[in-house]
Length: 234
Image 1 (cartoon, rainbow, N blue to C red):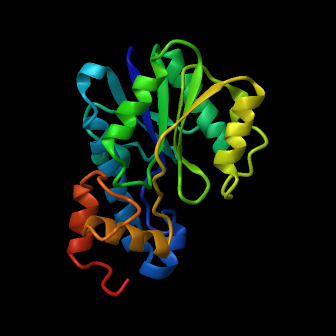
Image 2 (cartoon, helix red, strand yellow):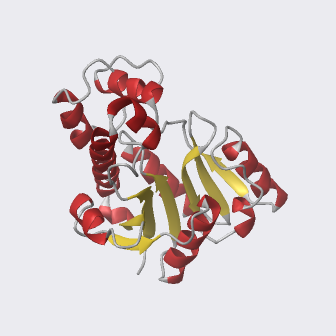
């Protein structure tokens, strides 16, 4: 392998196991379908990164046995990598190591819950990582986490002493990088869709009424699902 590995980190969409916070408002079936749309759209964002830049997409998925689901949702050229462990830190460092070990020159791990992720952010991240010297690229999310982390080397310290799922994740990750002298390149803020509020942000963005998030990806699958009226009133 060569070039950049871009892995989508997420669970295979399954009713009752996908998007549980959203499911309480829109139902388990709709939440699972929406999750599937998100994965398709993030996959399309990766495919929109110029091939000349050198990249390959992966689904970094759980649970074991969900390979057929992931293959149906992701572009044909994507590889699959089973998540290592349940803790997010273990998942991220495990995927980083595995993808570097097969010969990729850098790894980007992106959240599977950002359907309008702009492909230009991925291009910017790869370009930054290919500069001389070791560094981290971080895409801060609106909730205090991050939607993207990019690395050239598997720095375990970046995934330790992190209160996953809290508003301190991105800040703590930058602190870990500073502690080991790792340069950090920040991408623009973007957002994950994981509750009713952020679903409303998504709706606003897709109809051009968002003042905060603009020029995102087209999100064809998600757009079609929402335009079909599956969640009227939200």
